[in-house]
Image 1 (tube, rainbow, N blue to C red):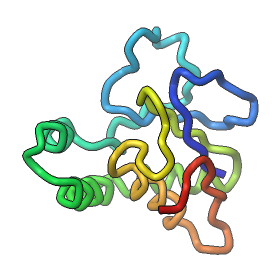
Image 2 (cartoon, one colour; image 1 turned 60 degrees about the vertical axis):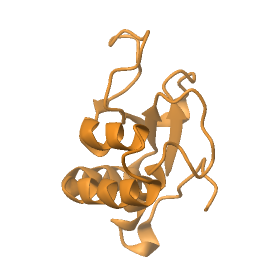
Image 3 (tube, rainbow, N blue to C red; image 1 turned 90 degrees about the vertical axis):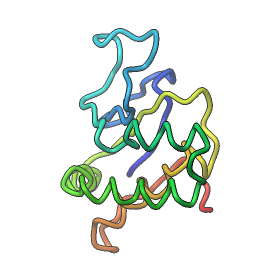
Length: 133
């Protein structure tokens, strides 16, 4: 099972293995206070890509395409986490102020789906907390 939560949400025993998936450390949280087993900066959009998108130098379609290319460059990390999700719950944690189904953050859906698509269909983990769309 793969689920996604904000880093500010309380931890739960059902979280399983917790991975911080954010380029920057969450503001206002000490490293020893954040319940996470791993920090995967490489699974987030690069600083260059993020700045281009937020600065409106590129549109969402171009952002998504480039983000998928960046994710492909870190396929081993995705495969490892996908395999882990077959054995235990996996919680991907981020710092957006709110989680909106289908757009958390822009481009996140391809990342989440790539985790589940890296495993053969019969063994794919359940991807929770997101609307299909």
